[in-house]
Length: 126
View 1 (cartoon, rainbow, N blue to C red):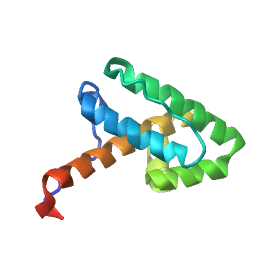
View 2: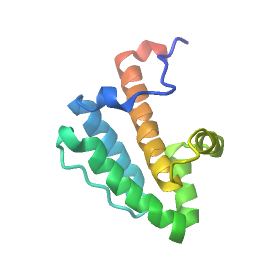
View 3: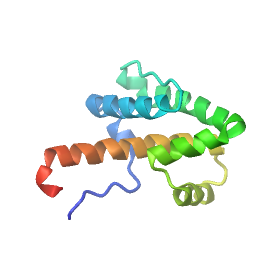
View 4: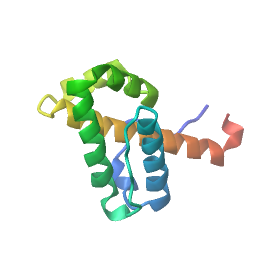
């Protein structure tokens, strides 16, 4: 199978692709809602990343200090492995954990959307 390369995706390439942004925001909203957290996207592409990052970061900060078990469940739902998290913590030791996790969540949700779209456009690759 010849999948496109999605490792180390550069989020900034997709900041002005409105439909991708909407799909990523919808995926984030859905995943966080399952765990009782509200994330809302205004639909404004110009500030989409900051808007989503700020909300995710608030929730992650809360869960790190108050509800770690729910954070673990959320990360599992989003499909962020402990191995990936540790690797990034070692790679970026000066970044606060809540910010690192928030960035990783956005990156993973973007990858989900891109992969889903790839297979919608290429059903023969399934």
